Amino acid sequence: MTLRKIAGLGALLPLLLPGVALAEEATLDSGDTAWMLTATALVLFMTIPGLALFYAGMVRSKNVLSVMMQCFAITGVMSLLWFIYGYSLAFDTTGMQADVLNLNSFVGGLGNLFLGNLTKEALVGAFPESVFITFQMTFAIITPALIVGAFAERMKFSAMLVFMVVWFTLVYAPIAHMVWGGDGALMWDWGVLDFAGGTVVHINAGIAGLVACVMLGKRKGYPTTAMAPHNLGYTLIGAAMLWVGWFGFNAGSAIAADETAGMAMLVTQIATAAAALAWMFAEWLSHGKPSALGIASGVVAGLVAITPAAGTVGPVGALVIGLAAGVICFFCATSLKRKLGYDDSLDVFGVHCIGGIVGALLTGVFAASSMGGFGEVESIAGQLWIQAKGVGFTLIYTTVVTVVILKVIDLLMGLRVSEEEETVGLDLAQHNERGYNL
Image 1 (cartoon, rainbow, N blue to C red):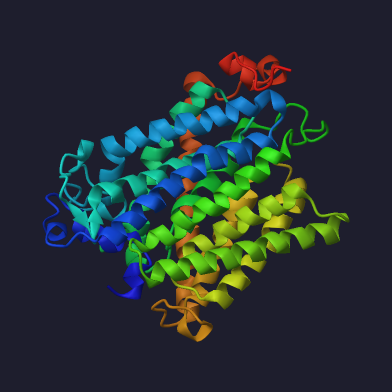
Image 2: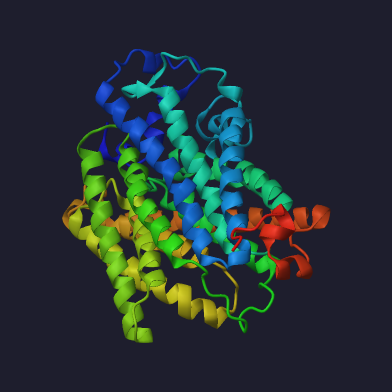
Protein backbone atom coordinates (compact mmCIF):
# COMPACT_ATOMS: atom_id res chain seq x y z
CA MET A 1 0.00 0.00 0.00
CA THR A 2 1.51 3.30 -1.06
CA LEU A 3 1.64 6.34 1.15
CA ARG A 4 -0.80 8.08 -1.19
CA LYS A 5 -3.28 5.31 -0.51
CA ILE A 6 -2.61 5.28 3.20
CA ALA A 7 -3.54 8.97 3.21
CA GLY A 8 -7.20 8.15 2.67
CA LEU A 9 -9.61 5.51 3.88
CA GLY A 10 -10.59 4.89 0.28
CA ALA A 11 -7.56 2.61 0.06
CA LEU A 12 -9.77 0.01 1.68
CA LEU A 13 -12.58 0.31 -0.84
CA PRO A 14 -11.75 -2.92 -2.71
CA LEU A 15 -12.22 -4.75 0.57
CA LEU A 16 -15.68 -3.33 1.13
CA LEU A 17 -17.52 -4.69 -1.90
CA PRO A 18 -20.35 -7.19 -1.46
CA GLY A 19 -19.02 -10.52 -0.28
CA VAL A 20 -15.69 -8.94 0.79
CA ALA A 21 -13.92 -11.75 -1.01
CA LEU A 22 -10.58 -10.00 -0.95
CA ALA A 23 -10.89 -9.22 2.73
CA GLU A 24 -11.66 -12.81 3.67
CA GLU A 25 -8.31 -13.87 2.22
CA ALA A 26 -6.54 -11.67 4.76
CA THR A 27 -5.48 -12.80 8.22
CA LEU A 28 -6.85 -11.34 11.41
CA ASP A 29 -4.22 -9.42 13.39
CA SER A 30 -5.10 -9.13 17.07
CA GLY A 31 -2.90 -6.06 17.51
CA ASP A 32 -4.58 -4.11 14.69
CA THR A 33 -7.97 -5.25 15.93
CA ALA A 34 -7.27 -4.15 19.50
CA TRP A 35 -6.05 -0.75 18.33
CA MET A 36 -9.04 -0.16 16.06
CA LEU A 37 -11.46 -1.15 18.83
CA THR A 38 -9.71 1.36 21.09
CA ALA A 39 -9.65 4.09 18.43
CA THR A 40 -13.36 3.60 17.77
CA ALA A 41 -14.19 4.05 21.44
CA LEU A 42 -11.97 7.16 21.57
CA VAL A 43 -13.76 8.82 18.65
CA LEU A 44 -17.17 8.13 20.18
CA PHE A 45 -15.78 9.57 23.43
CA MET A 46 -15.12 12.78 21.49
CA THR A 47 -18.84 13.37 20.96
CA ILE A 48 -20.29 11.94 24.15
CA PRO A 49 -19.21 13.23 26.56
CA GLY A 50 -16.43 15.39 25.02
CA LEU A 51 -18.22 17.65 22.54
CA ALA A 52 -21.39 17.64 24.66
CA LEU A 53 -19.50 19.09 27.62
CA PHE A 54 -17.40 21.44 25.49
CA TYR A 55 -20.53 23.02 24.02
CA ALA A 56 -22.63 22.84 27.19
CA GLY A 57 -20.19 24.99 29.13
CA MET A 58 -20.20 27.75 26.53
CA VAL A 59 -23.95 28.33 26.37
CA ARG A 60 -26.07 30.09 29.01
CA SER A 61 -27.30 27.99 31.93
CA LYS A 62 -30.86 27.92 30.56
CA ASN A 63 -29.63 26.02 27.47
CA VAL A 64 -27.09 23.62 28.97
CA LEU A 65 -29.28 20.54 28.58
CA SER A 66 -30.45 21.44 25.08
CA VAL A 67 -27.01 21.21 23.48
CA MET A 68 -26.17 18.05 25.40
CA MET A 69 -29.51 16.55 24.34
CA GLN A 70 -28.78 17.43 20.73
CA CYS A 71 -25.40 15.67 20.88
CA PHE A 72 -26.93 12.55 22.41
CA ALA A 73 -29.87 12.47 19.98
CA ILE A 74 -27.54 12.91 17.01
CA THR A 75 -25.42 10.03 18.28
CA GLY A 76 -28.45 7.76 18.24
CA VAL A 77 -29.86 8.93 14.93
CA MET A 78 -26.57 8.79 13.01
CA SER A 79 -25.76 5.34 14.37
CA LEU A 80 -28.96 3.95 12.91
CA LEU A 81 -28.70 5.86 9.63
CA TRP A 82 -25.15 4.60 9.18
CA PHE A 83 -26.39 1.03 9.70
CA ILE A 84 -29.41 1.43 7.40
CA TYR A 85 -27.84 3.17 4.39
CA GLY A 86 -25.01 5.56 5.34
CA TYR A 87 -22.19 3.02 5.17
CA SER A 88 -23.46 1.83 1.83
CA LEU A 89 -23.71 5.35 0.39
CA ALA A 90 -20.19 6.17 1.54
CA PHE A 91 -18.35 2.99 0.61
CA ASP A 92 -20.42 0.75 -1.68
CA THR A 93 -19.68 1.13 -5.41
CA THR A 94 -22.33 -1.08 -6.95
CA GLY A 95 -25.54 -0.16 -8.71
CA MET A 96 -24.94 3.57 -9.20
CA GLN A 97 -23.67 3.66 -12.80
CA ALA A 98 -25.47 5.62 -15.50
CA ASP A 99 -24.90 6.04 -19.22
CA VAL A 100 -24.43 9.80 -19.04
CA LEU A 101 -23.28 10.39 -15.49
CA ASN A 102 -21.13 8.16 -13.33
CA LEU A 103 -22.87 8.63 -10.02
CA ASN A 104 -20.09 6.74 -8.27
CA SER A 105 -18.00 9.88 -8.64
CA PHE A 106 -20.31 11.55 -6.14
CA VAL A 107 -21.95 8.89 -3.98
CA GLY A 108 -21.79 5.18 -3.27
CA GLY A 109 -24.45 2.63 -4.09
CA LEU A 110 -27.29 0.94 -2.24
CA GLY A 111 -25.88 -2.54 -2.45
CA ASN A 112 -25.17 -2.83 1.25
CA LEU A 113 -28.38 -1.55 2.82
CA PHE A 114 -28.87 -2.67 6.43
CA LEU A 115 -25.31 -4.05 6.16
CA GLY A 116 -26.75 -6.96 4.21
CA ASN A 117 -23.34 -8.04 2.93
CA LEU A 118 -21.62 -8.09 6.31
CA THR A 119 -20.44 -11.38 7.73
CA LYS A 120 -18.83 -12.01 11.09
CA GLU A 121 -15.66 -13.26 9.40
CA ALA A 122 -15.27 -10.37 6.92
CA LEU A 123 -12.03 -8.45 7.33
CA VAL A 124 -10.86 -4.99 6.31
CA GLY A 125 -7.11 -5.12 6.19
CA ALA A 126 -6.29 -7.24 9.23
CA PHE A 127 -9.27 -6.52 11.47
CA PRO A 128 -13.03 -7.19 11.27
CA GLU A 129 -15.11 -5.15 8.87
CA SER A 130 -17.61 -4.72 11.70
CA VAL A 131 -14.99 -2.68 13.55
CA PHE A 132 -14.31 -0.54 10.48
CA ILE A 133 -18.03 0.11 10.10
CA THR A 134 -18.30 1.21 13.72
CA PHE A 135 -15.14 3.34 13.43
CA GLN A 136 -16.56 5.16 10.43
CA MET A 137 -19.91 5.45 12.21
CA THR A 138 -18.26 7.57 14.91
CA PHE A 139 -17.07 10.02 12.22
CA ALA A 140 -20.63 10.19 10.88
CA ILE A 141 -21.80 10.96 14.42
CA ILE A 142 -19.43 13.79 15.31
CA THR A 143 -19.67 15.67 12.01
CA PRO A 144 -23.33 16.76 12.28
CA ALA A 145 -22.92 17.15 16.05
CA LEU A 146 -20.30 19.84 15.42
CA ILE A 147 -22.88 21.93 13.55
CA VAL A 148 -24.98 22.22 16.71
CA GLY A 149 -22.61 24.81 18.15
CA ALA A 150 -23.32 27.30 15.35
CA PHE A 151 -27.07 27.54 15.97
CA ALA A 152 -27.05 26.83 19.71
CA GLU A 153 -29.82 28.36 21.80
CA ARG A 154 -32.33 29.00 19.01
CA MET A 155 -33.27 26.02 16.79
CA LYS A 156 -36.28 23.79 17.44
CA PHE A 157 -35.31 20.30 18.53
CA SER A 158 -37.69 18.76 15.99
CA ALA A 159 -36.29 20.87 13.16
CA MET A 160 -32.76 19.99 14.25
CA LEU A 161 -33.51 16.26 13.98
CA VAL A 162 -35.01 16.58 10.50
CA PHE A 163 -32.16 18.80 9.34
CA MET A 164 -29.51 16.35 10.57
CA VAL A 165 -31.16 13.36 8.89
CA VAL A 166 -31.39 15.12 5.52
CA TRP A 167 -27.97 16.76 5.82
CA PHE A 168 -26.32 13.44 6.63
CA THR A 169 -27.98 11.86 3.59
CA LEU A 170 -27.33 14.60 1.04
CA VAL A 171 -24.07 16.08 2.32
CA TYR A 172 -22.05 13.95 4.72
CA ALA A 173 -22.32 10.58 2.97
CA PRO A 174 -21.58 11.99 -0.53
CA ILE A 175 -18.60 14.07 0.67
CA ALA A 176 -17.21 11.07 2.57
CA HIS A 177 -17.51 8.99 -0.59
CA MET A 178 -15.99 11.65 -2.85
CA VAL A 179 -12.91 11.99 -0.61
CA TRP A 180 -12.44 8.41 0.64
CA GLY A 181 -14.33 6.36 -1.96
CA GLY A 182 -11.29 5.06 -3.83
CA ASP A 183 -10.77 4.96 -7.59
CA GLY A 184 -13.66 6.61 -9.40
CA ALA A 185 -14.63 8.91 -6.53
CA LEU A 186 -14.33 12.58 -7.46
CA MET A 187 -11.90 14.08 -4.96
CA TRP A 188 -10.03 10.82 -4.51
CA ASP A 189 -9.26 10.83 -8.23
CA TRP A 190 -8.17 14.46 -8.00
CA GLY A 191 -5.58 13.35 -5.45
CA VAL A 192 -6.95 15.29 -2.45
CA LEU A 193 -5.07 14.36 0.73
CA ASP A 194 -7.41 14.11 3.70
CA PHE A 195 -6.08 11.60 6.17
CA ALA A 196 -8.73 11.76 8.87
CA GLY A 197 -11.42 14.22 7.84
CA GLY A 198 -10.27 17.81 7.53
CA THR A 199 -12.51 18.17 4.50
CA VAL A 200 -15.06 15.43 5.19
CA VAL A 201 -15.66 16.44 8.81
CA HIS A 202 -14.46 19.93 9.67
CA ILE A 203 -14.76 22.09 6.55
CA ASN A 204 -18.02 20.29 5.82
CA ALA A 205 -19.54 20.88 9.27
CA GLY A 206 -18.02 24.35 9.65
CA ILE A 207 -19.50 25.83 6.50
CA ALA A 208 -22.85 24.16 7.20
CA GLY A 209 -22.77 25.78 10.63
CA LEU A 210 -22.19 29.21 9.12
CA VAL A 211 -25.10 28.73 6.73
CA ALA A 212 -27.36 27.59 9.56
CA CYS A 213 -26.55 30.47 11.92
CA VAL A 214 -27.03 33.04 9.16
CA MET A 215 -30.34 31.56 8.01
CA LEU A 216 -31.72 31.30 11.55
CA GLY A 217 -30.63 34.80 12.42
CA LYS A 218 -28.96 36.13 15.53
CA ARG A 219 -29.92 35.14 19.05
CA LYS A 220 -32.31 37.53 20.73
CA GLY A 221 -30.22 40.37 22.15
CA TYR A 222 -27.03 39.53 20.24
CA PRO A 223 -24.56 41.26 20.26
CA THR A 224 -25.65 43.92 22.77
CA THR A 225 -26.73 41.51 25.53
CA ALA A 226 -24.02 39.68 27.46
CA MET A 227 -24.06 35.98 26.61
CA ALA A 228 -21.03 34.74 28.52
CA PRO A 229 -20.33 31.00 28.89
CA HIS A 230 -22.03 29.78 32.05
CA ASN A 231 -19.52 27.06 33.04
CA LEU A 232 -16.05 27.16 31.54
CA GLY A 233 -15.11 24.20 33.73
CA TYR A 234 -17.35 22.05 31.53
CA THR A 235 -15.72 23.51 28.44
CA LEU A 236 -12.18 22.79 29.61
CA ILE A 237 -13.11 19.24 30.60
CA GLY A 238 -14.75 18.77 27.21
CA ALA A 239 -11.70 20.18 25.41
CA ALA A 240 -9.46 17.78 27.34
CA MET A 241 -11.68 14.86 26.31
CA LEU A 242 -11.54 16.00 22.70
CA TRP A 243 -7.74 16.20 22.87
CA VAL A 244 -7.43 12.66 24.20
CA GLY A 245 -10.14 11.24 21.95
CA TRP A 246 -8.56 12.82 18.88
CA PHE A 247 -5.73 10.30 18.99
CA GLY A 248 -8.32 7.73 18.00
CA PHE A 249 -9.57 10.09 15.30
CA ASN A 250 -6.16 10.69 13.72
CA ALA A 251 -3.96 7.74 14.66
CA GLY A 252 -6.93 5.40 14.18
CA SER A 253 -7.22 6.56 10.58
CA ALA A 254 -4.02 4.67 9.82
CA ILE A 255 -6.31 1.61 9.98
CA ALA A 256 -3.51 -0.38 11.63
CA ALA A 257 -1.26 -0.33 14.66
CA ASP A 258 1.79 0.68 12.64
CA GLU A 259 4.35 3.42 12.01
CA THR A 260 1.78 5.66 10.32
CA ALA A 261 -0.40 5.55 13.43
CA GLY A 262 2.61 6.35 15.60
CA MET A 263 3.59 9.38 13.53
CA ALA A 264 -0.04 10.55 13.37
CA MET A 265 -0.19 10.50 17.17
CA LEU A 266 3.05 12.48 17.51
CA VAL A 267 2.14 15.19 15.00
CA THR A 268 -1.33 15.51 16.51
CA GLN A 269 0.18 16.27 19.91
CA ILE A 270 2.70 18.76 18.50
CA ALA A 271 0.17 20.67 16.39
CA THR A 272 -2.39 20.83 19.18
CA ALA A 273 0.09 22.12 21.73
CA ALA A 274 1.37 24.72 19.27
CA ALA A 275 -2.13 25.93 18.37
CA ALA A 276 -3.23 26.17 22.00
CA LEU A 277 -0.25 28.35 22.87
CA ALA A 278 -0.49 30.38 19.66
CA TRP A 279 -4.14 31.23 20.38
CA MET A 280 -3.30 32.00 24.01
CA PHE A 281 -0.50 34.41 23.16
CA ALA A 282 -2.44 36.03 20.32
CA GLU A 283 -5.29 36.68 22.72
CA TRP A 284 -2.88 37.88 25.41
CA LEU A 285 -1.35 40.42 23.04
CA SER A 286 -4.70 41.53 21.64
CA HIS A 287 -6.83 41.65 24.78
CA GLY A 288 -4.30 41.99 27.57
CA LYS A 289 -5.07 38.69 29.28
CA PRO A 290 -5.09 35.02 28.27
CA SER A 291 -8.37 33.18 28.87
CA ALA A 292 -9.37 29.61 29.62
CA LEU A 293 -11.90 29.73 26.78
CA GLY A 294 -9.14 30.91 24.46
CA ILE A 295 -6.73 28.09 25.20
CA ALA A 296 -9.53 25.53 24.93
CA SER A 297 -10.49 26.98 21.54
CA GLY A 298 -6.85 26.88 20.47
CA VAL A 299 -6.68 23.22 21.39
CA VAL A 300 -9.60 22.42 19.11
CA ALA A 301 -8.21 24.59 16.30
CA GLY A 302 -4.95 22.65 16.38
CA LEU A 303 -6.71 19.30 16.45
CA VAL A 304 -8.84 20.32 13.48
CA ALA A 305 -5.94 21.64 11.41
CA ILE A 306 -3.71 18.59 11.83
CA THR A 307 -6.52 16.16 10.99
CA PRO A 308 -6.11 16.15 7.18
CA ALA A 309 -2.33 16.13 7.49
CA ALA A 310 -1.78 13.61 10.28
CA GLY A 311 -0.74 10.72 8.03
CA THR A 312 1.56 12.62 5.69
CA VAL A 313 3.39 15.42 7.55
CA GLY A 314 6.36 15.30 9.88
CA PRO A 315 6.91 17.01 13.23
CA VAL A 316 8.12 20.32 11.78
CA GLY A 317 5.14 20.52 9.45
CA ALA A 318 2.87 19.80 12.41
CA LEU A 319 4.42 22.66 14.36
CA VAL A 320 3.83 25.15 11.55
CA ILE A 321 0.28 23.91 10.96
CA GLY A 322 -0.51 24.25 14.67
CA LEU A 323 0.93 27.75 14.96
CA ALA A 324 -0.87 28.91 11.83
CA ALA A 325 -4.19 27.44 12.97
CA GLY A 326 -3.96 28.99 16.43
CA VAL A 327 -3.35 32.51 15.14
CA ILE A 328 -5.64 32.44 12.09
CA CYS A 329 -8.57 30.81 13.90
CA PHE A 330 -8.23 33.28 16.78
CA PHE A 331 -8.67 36.26 14.48
CA CYS A 332 -11.45 34.60 12.47
CA ALA A 333 -13.38 33.62 15.61
CA THR A 334 -13.08 37.10 17.10
CA SER A 335 -12.32 39.98 14.74
CA LEU A 336 -13.86 38.50 11.59
CA LYS A 337 -17.05 37.45 13.37
CA ARG A 338 -17.52 40.90 14.88
CA LYS A 339 -16.78 42.63 11.59
CA LEU A 340 -19.23 40.53 9.55
CA GLY A 341 -21.84 40.37 12.30
CA TYR A 342 -22.97 36.74 12.04
CA ASP A 343 -23.95 34.93 15.24
CA ASP A 344 -21.99 31.68 15.17
CA SER A 345 -22.78 30.90 18.81
CA LEU A 346 -19.81 28.66 19.62
CA ASP A 347 -17.44 29.53 16.75
CA VAL A 348 -17.99 26.43 14.64
CA PHE A 349 -17.09 28.25 11.43
CA GLY A 350 -14.12 30.13 12.88
CA VAL A 351 -12.56 27.04 14.41
CA HIS A 352 -13.68 24.06 12.33
CA CYS A 353 -14.11 25.46 8.83
CA ILE A 354 -11.18 27.89 8.98
CA GLY A 355 -8.99 25.41 10.86
CA GLY A 356 -9.89 22.71 8.37
CA ILE A 357 -8.99 24.97 5.45
CA VAL A 358 -5.65 25.90 7.03
CA GLY A 359 -4.85 22.23 7.60
CA ALA A 360 -6.02 21.08 4.18
CA LEU A 361 -3.98 23.68 2.32
CA LEU A 362 -0.83 23.26 4.41
CA THR A 363 -1.06 19.50 3.92
CA GLY A 364 -0.27 20.20 0.29
CA VAL A 365 2.95 21.88 1.39
CA PHE A 366 4.21 19.80 4.30
CA ALA A 367 3.29 16.37 2.92
CA ALA A 368 6.15 16.79 0.45
CA SER A 369 9.35 14.91 1.30
CA SER A 370 11.34 18.12 0.78
CA MET A 371 9.36 19.61 3.67
CA GLY A 372 9.82 16.62 5.94
CA GLY A 373 6.60 14.88 4.94
CA PHE A 374 5.75 11.36 3.85
CA GLY A 375 3.20 11.87 1.09
CA GLU A 376 3.60 11.16 -2.60
CA VAL A 377 3.72 14.82 -3.59
CA GLU A 378 5.39 15.40 -6.94
CA SER A 379 4.95 19.16 -6.88
CA ILE A 380 4.05 21.33 -3.90
CA ALA A 381 2.35 23.87 -6.15
CA GLY A 382 0.43 21.11 -7.89
CA GLN A 383 -0.68 19.47 -4.65
CA LEU A 384 -1.62 22.85 -3.19
CA TRP A 385 -3.89 23.41 -6.18
CA ILE A 386 -5.45 19.96 -5.69
CA GLN A 387 -6.07 20.70 -2.02
CA ALA A 388 -7.59 24.08 -2.90
CA LYS A 389 -9.92 22.40 -5.41
CA GLY A 390 -11.08 19.99 -2.73
CA VAL A 391 -11.67 22.82 -0.27
CA GLY A 392 -13.51 24.94 -2.84
CA PHE A 393 -15.73 22.12 -4.04
CA THR A 394 -16.70 21.19 -0.48
CA LEU A 395 -17.48 24.80 0.43
CA ILE A 396 -19.69 25.30 -2.62
CA TYR A 397 -21.45 21.93 -2.54
CA THR A 398 -22.17 21.98 1.18
CA THR A 399 -23.28 25.61 1.16
CA VAL A 400 -25.76 25.15 -1.67
CA VAL A 401 -27.26 21.90 -0.40
CA THR A 402 -27.45 23.13 3.21
CA VAL A 403 -29.26 26.32 2.13
CA VAL A 404 -31.83 24.27 0.23
CA ILE A 405 -32.35 21.82 3.10
CA LEU A 406 -32.84 24.57 5.69
CA LYS A 407 -35.12 26.58 3.42
CA VAL A 408 -37.41 23.61 2.82
CA ILE A 409 -37.52 22.68 6.51
CA ASP A 410 -38.27 26.28 7.44
CA LEU A 411 -41.18 26.37 5.01
CA LEU A 412 -42.57 23.04 6.20
CA MET A 413 -42.18 23.26 9.97
CA GLY A 414 -40.15 26.31 10.93
CA LEU A 415 -36.58 26.30 12.14
CA ARG A 416 -36.55 28.63 15.09
CA VAL A 417 -38.19 28.63 18.49
CA SER A 418 -40.44 31.55 19.42
CA GLU A 419 -39.05 34.64 21.16
CA GLU A 420 -40.79 33.59 24.35
CA GLU A 421 -39.20 30.12 24.23
CA GLU A 422 -35.80 31.61 23.50
CA THR A 423 -36.15 33.94 26.49
CA VAL A 424 -37.19 31.10 28.81
CA GLY A 425 -34.41 28.88 27.46
CA LEU A 426 -34.51 25.71 25.39
CA ASP A 427 -34.07 23.43 28.41
CA LEU A 428 -37.55 24.28 29.68
CA ALA A 429 -39.19 25.24 26.39
CA GLN A 430 -38.08 22.18 24.40
CA HIS A 431 -37.46 19.53 27.05
CA ASN A 432 -39.35 20.66 30.18
CA GLU A 433 -36.23 20.23 32.29
CA ARG A 434 -33.65 22.37 34.03
CA GLY A 435 -29.93 21.81 34.01
CA TYR A 436 -29.69 23.16 37.55
CA ASN A 437 -32.15 23.01 40.42
CA LEU A 438 -30.51 25.12 43.09
